Image (cartoon, rainbow, N blue to C red; front, side):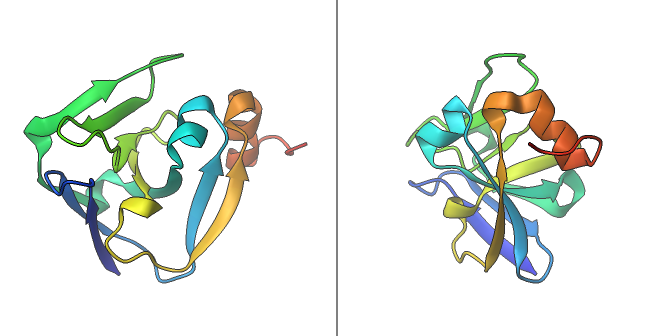
Length: 127
């Protein structure tokens, strides 16, 4: 299924190919995700198209610097970004989609990132 979305002001727009619902999503409790209410839908780079606004994206990195948080420089909304956890995919904010599909939301303990990533990859049991 093809979905579209973007930032609040509409300057940044994208389309993405998602599987049929329910779509897997992650709710993270790290400092930035919990403050911004970001619900992650992981989309492979090849299944994502930035339609407008690339020149308006502002980058922010913190912690390890591996994740690149991309904000619209006009309205400040982060509708997608390059996550540390999935270097070959974008993380799209479910709240930034024009029409949100049914989601199956799992919890990701971003405050204990290494353990949560291992659990996500199936290399360690989540506690």
